[in-house]
Amino acid sequence: MIVDDPTAHRSRWHWRTLDNAAGGLALDLGLYAVSATFAAITAVTSTLLPHRAWGAVAAVGYLLATLTVIAQLLLRRRSPTSRLTGLPARWAVTGLAWATTTLLPLAWQSIDRAGGRTDRAQEEVLVVEQAGSRLLEHGTPYLGPDAIAALPPGEQLMGYTPYQPGMAMFGLPRALLDTWWTDSRVWFTVGTALALALAVAALRRTPATAGQATTGGATAGQATTAATHRRDAALLRGVQAATVLPICALTLATGGDDLPVLALCLLALAFAAADRPGRAGLAVGLAGALKLFAWPVALVLIVWGLTRRAGTRVAVGAIGLPIAALLPALLVDRDALTENVLRFPLGHGLVTSPAQSPFPGYLIASALPAGRLIAAGLLVAAGVAIAVRLARRPPRTAVATALICGYGLLAAIALMPTTRFGYLLYPLALLTWAPALHRPGDTPTAAVADEGSGRTTSA
Figure (spheres, rainbow, N blue to C red):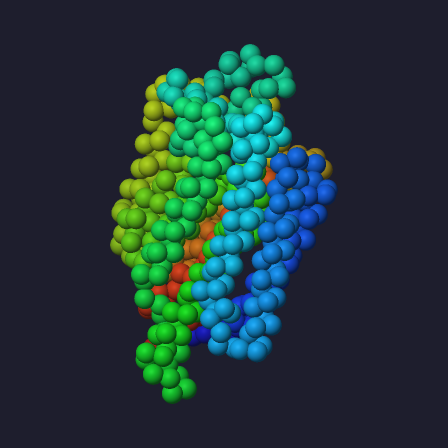
């Protein structure tokens, strides 16, 4: 058996106590109330007009969800077993919150933009749609360095497409028809919703682990029912993190290109939990064909696959799909691909990336002599530390895989010289998703710590 790590056990106990308070409603209330405050502040103070427009609508949506949860809490005091306070009702409130804080402001901004408003989308929406047009006309979504240099200085930044070629697919509808529902954000939302729905379905088809719930006289059936309820509650929390958390709702409603990438990564981890390594590789490969942020997740999943003698099955999709997406652009204009996908993100393009959130890497790069070299060294050191961890204790569970991906991306975002606050949606969602990935055979503490103490003993 695996010896419990007392520190990990205590931290999990504290989180579970908080998460289960009032049947999960207490944390729901905190999430929606804090989100309503954030949205209201955004509506008043943001310097980005699409963000202000989102905040004005989302604040009302979060407030409605907050009031609904308060009513559920009051009802639960009078009737603890009421269906209106149970898990299905919490799923319904989450759906309502996503509709009012993401889908409604997204549709409103898309319709306004189609009507001529120029302040109803972030720049990445325009970039993706322009990439779709170029793909349709020239066979590549990228402009070469000469074409970018020929643009007026104020427009050169918009000439870059710092994504993988697959992202241009979300811009194709706009290239074919100019109307509100061909806005790339609408298709980002369709892709996100589809990936999350498949992830939820995959996890619900996977039997939940009963762990040690059979102690205390409980029957096996009762233990399985309790385990299923815990898994579904954790799954709800993971879906909330990927949908109604303000950093995700705001991003999808105003820009949105990160959300389908995140959702596909979550789908890949769900397939890993369901012991479907080939499908996990395909899902993360699709994400990698959209954006570089998915590539670290693909690497960790391949290592996970190796522990199950399925590394090749994971790698076929995880590596093959991004390469297949890159080949046409490489054959059409290799220099344009290099300029957009490599030189610009690394800070060697014709213009500088505007991604400059005040994280440690950016502060070091901008404030210290040779700061960029120092920040790059710290980033490399973090990467080496993660590589050593993967080599010495490769993740054997989907839970451990998600945790390594989440903490690894958090470190990378903190240390990159150029980054955005919005990128935090990746580690936040991945770490929140992890508890929903438990499967039969995972011991209660080992699934989270992945034998983190490295100590085993025979029963």
